[in-house]
Image 1 (tube, one colour):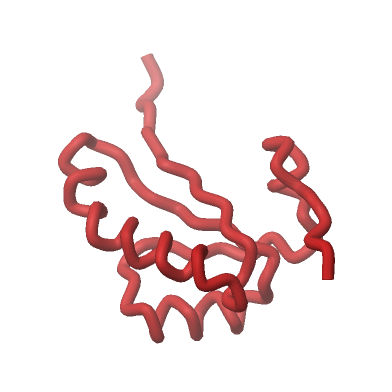
Image 2 (image 1 turned 90 degrees about the vertical axis):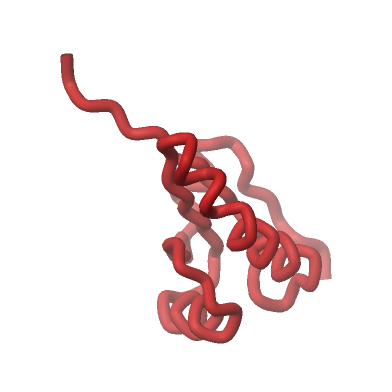
Length: 85
């Protein structure tokens, strides 16, 4: 039987969203509980890798923030949408 990995996959809009930033910090606070359950945590946003790294450092996050600048991953999970401006 192949090894299985459990991942909590979180999509967030971008650094401009105060609710998303709060969400990322809350996940950081819950990270040890997530890990204790044998899972990892990954957050994905449409922002560039540089902004993701800056945000990870600014928020002092110890889990991965990945970039999906073209929305390809979000589309596969059926969570891609346009934000009205």
